[in-house]
Image 1 (cartoon, one colour):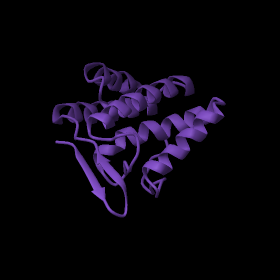
Image 2: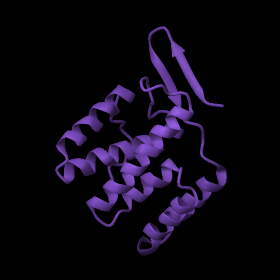
Image 3: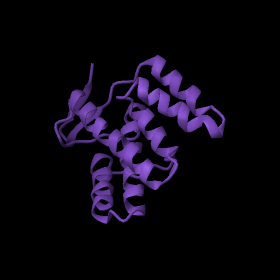
Image 4: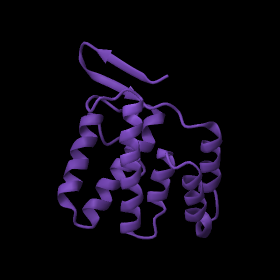
Length: 147
């Protein structure tokens, strides 16, 4: 069941439901593959579970170049918006890093922001950075891996 918390002191908070255990295990195994095989292993997980936000984030991090990473993060971002809506998000409110299940989406959005900046999509990079701060006012988290 999706968790949406309404508080009198601020916007609602959405927590994405956990991804299936089998999918999480497959992604952990793919990420443990030798470096030369890792991208293909992660891509196989994403092909099997194309709604996996953690999978898209990992595929973005494993991209062979900035454009490939940008594309994976962008798909993950759009899949994430769909997932957020399915979990009760109505276009505003918090989606905080402190909730492990939100991290796949936030990694996709942060990766999209970095890659957009890298390829000269300055307006998109700015929008992503602003959106991250709206979703989690303490962004960026100290434990974010900047890959």
